[in-house]
Length: 388
Ligand SMILES: *[C@@H]1O[C@H](CO)[C@@H](O)[C@H](O)[C@H]1NC(C)=O
Ligand SMILES: *[C@@H]1O[C@H](CO)[C@@H](O)[C@H](O)[C@H]1NC(C)=O
Ligand SMILES: *[C@@H]1O[C@H](CO)[C@@H](O)[C@H](O)[C@H]1NC(C)=O
Ligand SMILES: *[C@@H]1O[C@H](CO)[C@@H](O)[C@H](O)[C@H]1NC(C)=O
Image (tube, rainbow, N blue to C red; front, side, top):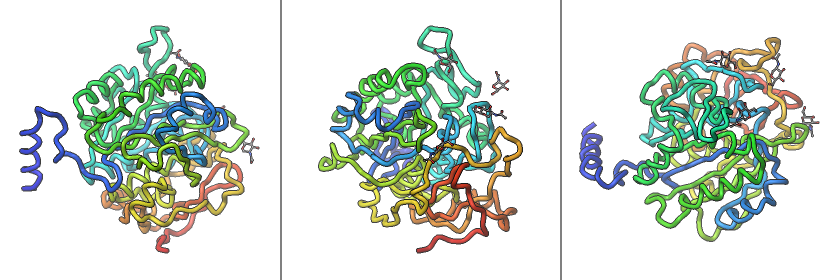
């Protein structure tokens, strides 16, 4: 408490010059993570796009990164909670207070965070969609690409809700050198490629990223993950491009590729490994950690999923947010026995919230297998630990 007080004093004393160093929770490999989400493109097409080829020279291309299902919304939801709860559509959904997200893990270790959504009409907006900067009367901002507002654990807390802001706010925050340490960004429906083309979105990204990749853009080591929510072709495995960029990339690794198997859950496990965070007790545990981070922190559990030959990730498995009521299931109980990539157990507040359900069966075993609604349905078992 005392320490907090002195930190606050220090921050106050330095507030004239932006985010004071004392306000940053140092990570083992990076001090800030920014992920930017584009829409609906297949790996094979993106990897030869000229803007991506140019950006790749400054970063690490992840060559085996898979989205979870179709359409968009479940992939966004998955990235925050380590689970998409059977969601198979883009309509309005909502998840109860006891479903925790990365926000809970970050706040527990005083890591600052923010979500930025281009053309969001105001902080914490929870509506379905909004017209914005394109002036076409079309929807520029859409709720289905803003996963935070689906979680009551975010929206029931006014301070959290106010951390969801527009791109204009991001630019002001960037200019003031006050960008939070975890940042999730969704461009509008034109710039993310949803209503435009592959080339339109990659050109936008290239331009948007230049200031963020400039020398001294940030005072702290920053890792940027440019990714897609899902692939375009539903009949093929959900293979997408993710590119790692920013000052946290070791110079010797710029222009290289990493062939480790990843999904959006890998962002969660990488954040846990970097900041020594607790886990969510869901599919975050067992997801491979970005290799250059795993190598630096000594995380050795990366491996291909056991069911690799049948990985397809094109159809949602049963769950509470499925629109076919015959495959609707309750929200699974988190597995409270798992140790995650941060070397810690489940977040104590999640354990407390679910303590009444401890005897329930759970699909989460920390094993790193990936599930779909086709050949790889989740298997429910008595919770077991994942010690090697
Ligand atoms: C469920 O959502 C999918 C994707 O939007 C849609 O194609 C399908 O018709 C919906 N099914 C029901 C039962 O609403
Ligand atoms: C938001 O969309 C859902 C369907 O996804 C609809 O039921 C609801 O009425 C919409 N809300 C508003 C405010 O338009
Ligand atoms: C983008 O396309 C969607 C339909 O997929 C439409 O509802 C929306 O208004 C369009 N947005 C713009 C800015 O054209
Ligand atoms: C993947 O799933 C899609 C949708 O069900 C299906 O069309 C396709 O055949 C599957 N591909 C493989 C390799 O299983």
